[in-house]
Image 1 (cartoon, rainbow over the protein chains, first blue to last red):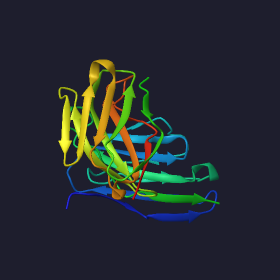
Image 2 (image 1 turned 135 degrees about the vertical axis):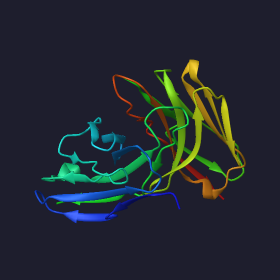
Image 3 (image 1 turned 180 degrees about the vertical axis):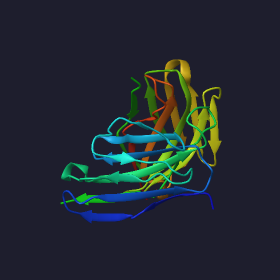
Length: 115
Length: 114
């Protein structure tokens, strides 16, 4: 089954404790991205990757890191989480960033709480 | 910078009504527009994708239209059911400001009551 998976689905942590949220897709997609969703602010893109070893900042990259060492995986790293990073996080992928046929597929989400 | 607006923000209707949800965008240079459904606390499920060269797409009781020149899309839901209750999001993708960042609307929260 074609899908985007994220782990963990729920995470409660404390300020300053480094964490990684994993994302994996099995569709051989080139383009992957991370979003955060907050009430009243909608979905905002954090980072995106056009292909292996190619990443770039989205609208709200501060406090986050990403890496793309393999095509299927795109982990999101919070090196020193803070309470304002409490949010619902989504990973998404599409075949490529451009082109009219490129449908975005979303993971199930990771609800992160930073105390 | 691309901006996407969805109207109305919330909608509550009785079962059986035909509905129209609106999405407008400011930059018409888009590759495509995608409609999603999101249940509370859940992920986004893709409903319909309209390429910039297309005028509409249909899937079951859903029909989405695109008027790129006027920067508008509508999602039509026929014979609404309680199971349609969810938030509906539209997103446009294009090359804007040197990046491919997709832009989402804030969504329309729909409640269909029996």
